[in-house]
Length: 422
Image (cartoon, rainbow, N blue to C red):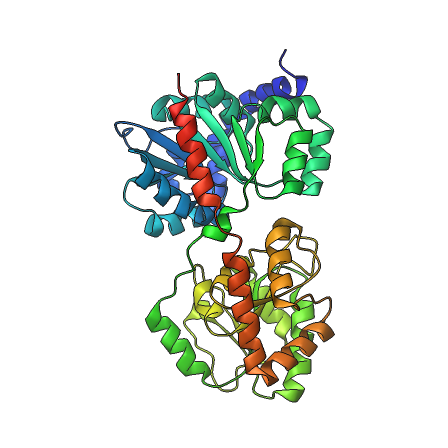
């Protein structure tokens, strides 16, 4: 018997379907949709289905799609197939345009109405569908299951907050999660949550992000930055969220008393926040990268409000603060800087990447900060002792390397799923 929650969801999404084109137009005006690609959001294929086996990979946004890149490359080498990658954000589409390997292509995920998802599935007819992390769309998942698509939840993640919410709708959760032939969880705690909600065949294999390639960097732009900064000491705060600059900037002020030429680089998680960050900087001399400016000798704070350039900034220093951790967001990916030999400083809220942070902090021996004074104190130590900063960076790199292996295990699982088709 279909749970009431799913029946109600289908009724509501069916009733809302006529309003979807108008909602897409409004989102387009806000820069959240591609006008010329809105038909994809309604389930229409952007191109004919390629011949042969088609493996469908879905990631919600940039982070999930980037994590899937090494998996996509490995699948194309292991299986004669094409790979369809779907995502839901304009930014992820832009990033994937330049980074997908030959044999893979991108399409926007359809809105989760019965009609749009049916059109999508009937056009592409994938043999397997791999959902990265935790992006769960009931109509799409159940429709794929009804059509015999082999489904897997890979790099699976579920926060404690999401788990508590799903526990109030156990029958609905079990009906959706039982659609997956396998659930490949990032760690034991996450695996236990999925098992508790009725997910079959849960296996713990680690995170795909541990196998992701190092972030790229344009060598010309990197040389420009290094020339502009020179020998100035750097405090890098990457992937920051609202409420964190109020801690970073006082740390900057305290450090400037010891290091008068310190340059603080802030890379916000969402670049549209750059104006707000500039206002918070007040009288501090500030420049923004989106305007084409480079830091000058009197620049105190450099706001890196551009997309896809994190690899540049992680290469400028041997340690950095990772945002989303001083507030209850759960942290951002610490493996990206660690793979480049950049040690991590982090606040206490790291539940989105518990395994990765635990491994890196254990390898480094230090890195947990709770206040501006903690950031200033540890930064002072590392700026005064470059050898120690280098040691921590090397330790972080080794700690990240020890977490690898999830891509090979995921590929083996997918091959087994395909071989089991009836």
